[in-house]
Image 1: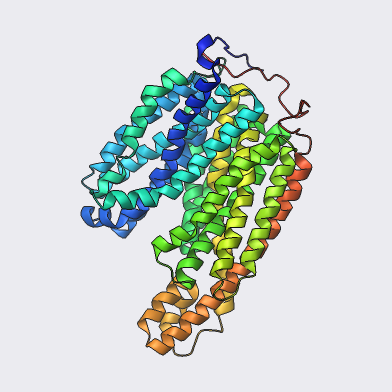
Image 2: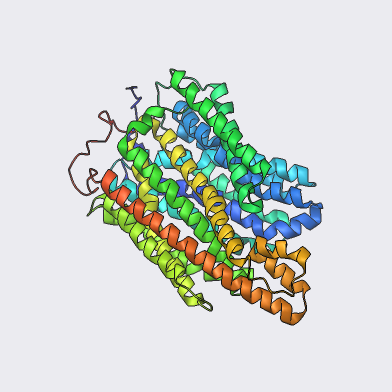
Length: 529
C-alpha cells in the first residue's frame, strides 16, 4: 500500500468549528455545479433569440456542460489524488469563474458553446475534490456521514433553485446574468478555502497517463451522448453507434489500466465488496430516479395540463422530501447498519412508485404524494451511499473513489432518461396502436403514436372534437404506460433493497465500535499538509 504524507499544521483541523466552516466553503461548488445546469433552462429561449442559435446549437449549449462534467470526473478526481485536492479545487474554481464571465458576454452561439465546454471541465474538478476533502476535515464516521449528506443536499438545492433564480434574474437583467452567479461564489471559495480547508493528496502517487485520459473521454463522452440521443429520438443508428463506440473504448481503457503501474483508475478499488455493492445500488437507483423524474414531469404538463412553472412548483414537496431523506440517512446509520438503511430507503421508494403506478385519470394528488414518498426513500441512501463509497476506499484514493461515485450517478440519470423513458415510450406506442380515433389523418398517425407530446401537437391541428378525442385517448394511454413503468421500477428497487441488505450487512452502524471486515486494512488518517 502506498504511504501517505501526514504532516499537518496543528491549527488546521483541530477546531471542530473550523471544520464545519470548511464544509460550508466546500458546499459552495456543490451548490453551483447543479445550479449552473438548471438555471440555463430558463434563459435558453431569450439567449437563443439574442444570439440567433439554431435548434442544434441550442442542444449543444444545454448538453455540452453535462457531457464535459461526466467525461472529466474520473480524470479530475485522480488528478486531485496526485497533485492535491485543494489545489485542483482552487484551479477549477478560478477556471469556472473566468468561463462564467466568457459565457455571460458571449456574442455568438459558438462562443457560448466553447464557454460551456470550459465550464464543464472546470465543474468536473469541483465535486470530486470537495467530497474527498470532506474526509480530510471529518475523520469521525458519524460527522463525515452528516457532512457528506449536507454536501449532497446542496446538489439537490442547486438544481431546484436554478429555475427560480434564473427567472428572477431575467426579470431585471439580460440573459448573461444567469452565468455571472458563479463569479462571486467562486471568489469566496478562492479566498476562504486556503484558510479553512487543509490540502490533501497521495504523496506516493505516480504520473498521469495521457493515453488513459484520452481513452476515458473516448469511452464516457460517446456513451453519455448516445444515451441522451436515445432518450430524445429513440433507437437510431447514431445513438446505437456512439454507445457501441463508447463501450469499445471503455474496454480498451480497462485493458490499459490493468497494465499500468500507476493507473488513472485503480481497478483494485472494485475488489472491496462495499465499494462495488454501493456503486451498483447508486447506479440502478439513479436509473430509476432519472426515469421517474422524466415521466412525472411529463404527466404534470401533458396530462394534467400544468404550465412549466406550476409543474416545477408541484415537484417542490418531493425535492424537500428528498433533502430530508438525504439528511436522515446518516442519522439512521448511527443506530442501524448502513446496508439496512439503504434497503429501507429502497422499500419506501418502491412504495411511493406503486402509489404512482396505481393512479388513474385526475390523480394529481396521488402522483405528487407518491412521487414525494419515492424521493424521500431515494434520499435515504443518497448521501449515505457516497460516504460508504469514499469510506470503503483507501484514504489516499478518496478523490478517485468520489469521482467514481459521481460518475455512476451521472450515468444512472442518463440511463434513466434513456432506458426508462424508452420503456415507457414503447409501452405507450404499443397500447395506442389501435386506439387512435379515425378522424386523425393517416400522415399524422405516426406522430401521434411517437409520444404524448406528438399526440398533443397533432390534436392542436385537428377540429376541436377530433382533437379532444385524440388527446383524451393519448393521456389515458400515457397514464397507463407510466403506471406499468413505475411498477417495473418498484420491483427493481425491491431487488436493490435485497442486494443492499445482503451485501452490506457486514458494515456496522457508524455509532458502533465494531470494525468492518471489508474496510481497507491500512486506513491511516487522510493526508493533510
